[in-house]
Amino acid sequence: MADRKPLIAGNWKMNLNHLEAIALVQKIAFALPAKYFDKVDVTVIPPFTDIRSVQTVVDGDKLLLTYGAQDLSAHDSGAYTGEISGAFLAKLGCTFVVVGHSERRTMHAETDEVVLAKTKAALRHGLTPIVCIGEGLDIRESGEHVAYNVAQLKGSLAGLSAEEIGKVVIAYEPVWAIGTGRVASADDAQEVCKAVRQTLAEIADDATASSVRVLYGGSVNAKNVGDIVGQTDVDGALVGGASLKSDEFATLSAIAAGGPLP
Ligand SMILES: O=C(CO)COP(=O)(O)O
Image (cartoon, rainbow, N blue to C red; front, side, top):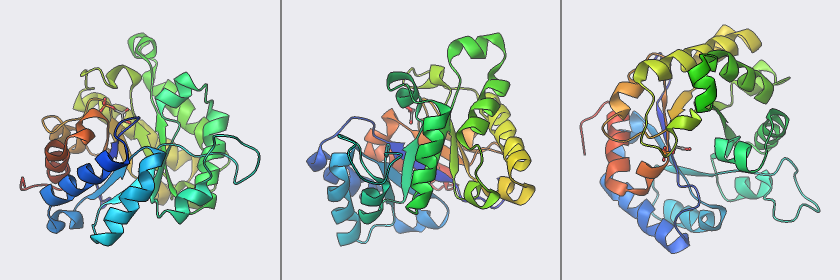
């Protein structure tokens, strides 16, 4: 995995209110002692309405886990009802922001152009965008998945400088593996994550490509995470369902850290 520190990011999606968020963060912190954080970065990505409460717990208890948001506006301020500015997220101490999750690409018609604009907005505010790509089942079955993901990656990062690309995290999440229990094989994850890294070398440079973290996401749990993050080009995981269970999330984070189990 070169010298890239693994990242485990728990995308809570639209689950847990702010009180439930406080409880889950406290349980994760209790289950994952400080020593693990030397070897793995762990972050939680709750709904917007939870972030202030999560910030209070993390700051108050001096926790080592970080937190982020699931989306942001491409705009910084103004007449955009319902949108959330990256400036607000930065002020709340967010480290990461997910952009281009397949659920937003599909249900909110987010194109690569929109994802690029949001990635730029994140970078403007000092947030680390976790840029998501991933193919549907039809593309996978047609055997065009590598080319599809490469095109989506290029579109989502078009025109960014090597320095800017060096500040992003990429998450490969095959849509057919999200929430289905159908995890991609470790080889499948490696195949696309390797192509992602080669593409980063092409659009930025070798040094940038070897420093950017590339995550896999889709039905990751404590049982399969070891195989997946053991792949050369997979630097961690974007975890949905299993991130809502404190013990499982702590265990899979510990496995990504190389153990031992907590
Ligand atoms: O979409 C995901 C994370 O962003 C993956 O979700 P699941 O882990 O529930 O499949």
